[in-house]
Image 1 (tube, rainbow, N blue to C red):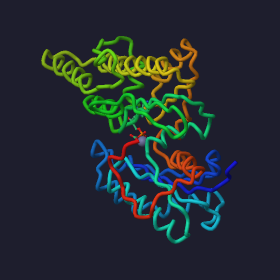
Image 2 (cartoon, protein in one colour):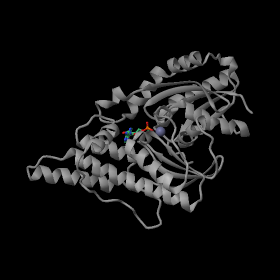
Image 3 (cartoon, rainbow, N blue to C red):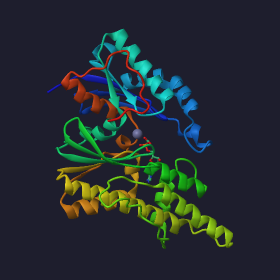
Image 4 (cartoon, helix red, strand yellow):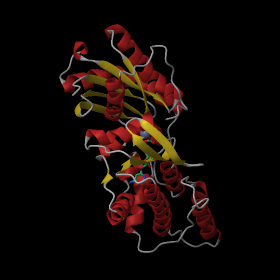
Amino acid sequence: PANELILAVETSCDETSVAVIRGGKEILSNVISSQIETHRRFGGVVPEIASRKHVESITIIMEQALAEAGVAFRDLSAIAVTQGPGLVGALLVGIVAAKGLAMALGLPLIGTHHIAGHIYANELVHEMIYPCLALVASGGHTELVLLESEGKFRIIGRTRDDAVGEAYDKVARTLHFPYPGGPHIDRLAQEAEEEIVLPRAWLEPDSYDFSFSGLKSAVLASINTAAMKGETIRQAALARGFQASVIDVLTTKALRAAREFGVKQLLLCGGVAANGGLRAELTARCADAGIPLLVPPLRLCTDNAAMIGAAAHLKWTRGEFTPLDMKAEPGLSL
Ligand code: KG4
Ligand code: ZN
């Protein structure tokens, strides 16, 4: 088996992260510096500030990742970096750093897709068995990805408007919770004693696509109506209704796809995998259907460079390297 040392860099959004991965499986280090505190007062990620923060921290994080791994530059086999999708200025910082290193050390460069990273985070803790289906749910993505074999991705469903984490954050913002609001809504929903039932966006009967903007508007409408009537806003009941709708649609579509494509595993990836309700419902429905559910530990679900190293490992074994003149691709497709 390959025992190569990959230094991986992730700067696609608001986490500056560098990891050292051995043989695609062993995490020697995975340093993550979050900018959340900086962006919080703006209620979301400000792209220009994100780029500057990455510039400030990238070399420090890189040195820390090497030191924690007990590895020197000369020990490395390849440099991996997120090529896209993401914020172009943020991506560029990681890419320029990775290219510089690859060039100076004479090492191959491996450009990696961010979603492939979220999916292959699973390889760091489990053995992926094909065909499998990944439900990728984060602040930037909501996708159902079918993997017929290793490295072969087919997006069978995606959001037509907001990503699920984005919808959580927007609803949280209307209820005056700080960014990122997902965890607040999750907690509120689980504490609620009542539920305001909200609509489910099933879309066309055979569609695996998602839509969350209508649901978000339903929450807003409910708040406005209450305010107009001078009634108190039932925050917890609304949060529970919102969460129930999101979870029902996500799990129903994921399980239907899992059955249709006869997958051997279902993978839950991305920051929204932190949602207690979603994990519980998927666990229950997968148990009923006899489909093993894989969920990486939380630290590997949110943006991190170890997952980029795991995805890059597959390209390494196939000798798929990326030319040094590659560009940041904010809209890169899988
Ligand atoms: O994967 P991630 O760290 O960053 C992106 O690539 O987007 O995901 C962050 C998203 C945010 O929208 C955050 O509100 C959401 O994940 N999130 C949650 C929970 N924890 C984080 N959403 C719902 N319930 C949670 N417990
Ligand atoms: Zn992500």
